[in-house]
Image 1: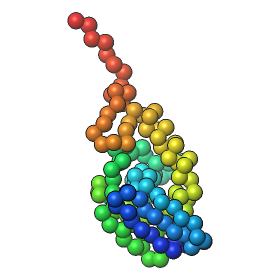
Image 2: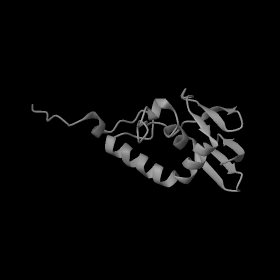
Image 3: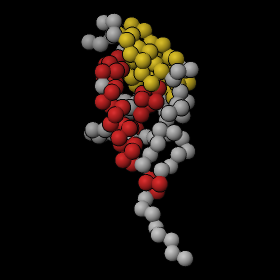
Image 4: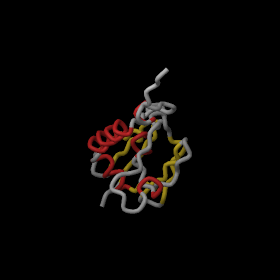
Amino acid sequence: MVNVKALKLRRASRTLEVTFADGRHAALPLEYLRVFSPSAELWGHGRSEPLLVGGKRAVNVARVEPVGRYAVKLVFDDGHDTGLFSWAVLDRLARDYEANWARYEARLAEAGMSRDRDVISLKALGPAKQWVP
């Protein structure tokens, strides 16, 4: 069973620092936690990957709400607040960070999306039409 000893929200660096009971430490970017939020909104029913969400580079957490002794609810400043981050979920996200993040960036590139708000790649707009005068 995974237990968390301490959580520290670092708004300036946009990270959630997690200290696990076994002594491991992880600094998880809030953008990562937002796009991998364990909510039905992102994961649906039976989805193997979360719904692809871009434009969250600058996302922050408005507040952290404890849920019993096993989880926290992160209320993001973009209004997302439906995922419960259990200690087991935080452990998995910490362990799989590098692989998850690489896949997320690859999926963004494939979709022509950006981590920044208000950025649309030409690829996302679809095939270009040739203009003939």
